[in-house]
Amino acid sequence: MINVLIADDYDLTRLGLRNKLTTIDPNCFDIEEAENGVVALRKLYEKEYNLLLLDWEMPKKGGFEVVKEITNDPSFTELCIIILSAHEKVDLFTYIKNFHHNKLSCIHKPYREDLLKRLIITNFDELTLK
Image (cartoon, rainbow, N blue to C red; front, side):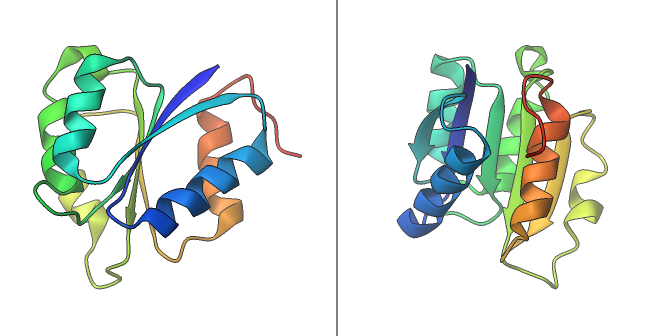
């Protein structure tokens, strides 16, 4: 089972990501949600997750602050993080290149479903492209 945390302030986005994961493999993901970065961090410290789908801009704490905090913590070195951003003018790669985390990716919203699927599958051996 792959433990997933979806952190996004829009409930429809969380629902869409949940549905996308279900289409990849309906029995492989245990999915939880967080509506902002503060809740996401609390959940990350309470439970071990394998995948974090993280919105770049959220109230209270955004994706940048969440990534900044957890990349300094060695207990998160195996966490796969995919940052999602609706801001095309923000060059996410510029912001994240200084984080020393080998499983950190980013894509822009609206994301291409095939790209999101490929990013997820390449990080988990138990999944295959269908």
